[in-house]
Length: 233
Image (tube, rainbow, N blue to C red; front, side, top):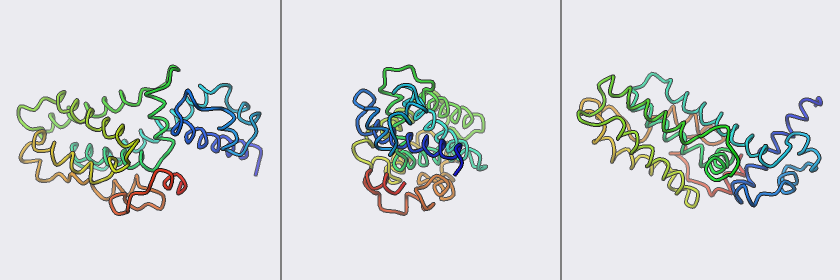
């Protein structure tokens, strides 16, 4: 392994250890010594890559943002109606939050930390949902009389709530939970002609693209505990 490869591997191990620490303890209680020992490296190796705890947190947030943006882009680029793409995106993002400790930690840090984050993941998600409903109105798939802004606010609030509840009970992040949400919402937001063609369970190819290690869909496996999911990663 070259020096550059060793440095990249060390940084990756530090990010994973930091994510686990922030996910379990939050920013304020996290210790740099715990992060370095969790990665199996010395405190000096940590400080070679990151000057401060805030820098480590910012790196975890940035990695979470890259993952979430990539998943959202993939779900939107599959040539499906915009509302189906939005449904798929919510399933894939919930699935990733369940399986990926970096994503979970990034979302927690983005919400809780006192440092000035370089990204605002929830505002990005709100913008994504607003854009989807604006496009749905333009393509005629939004129910007559349904305000795109009101629909976006409802979906944003519901999905943000599911993410928060999922911290204590991962069942909230399950395919069943998201399916129930969309079964309730679709009659209110989708035009009658579009409603019948939408699958509140999400489409299998999107779920497979964002699934747990091994590529299986989260809807076809028994949910694991968070600790088990982290070990699987």
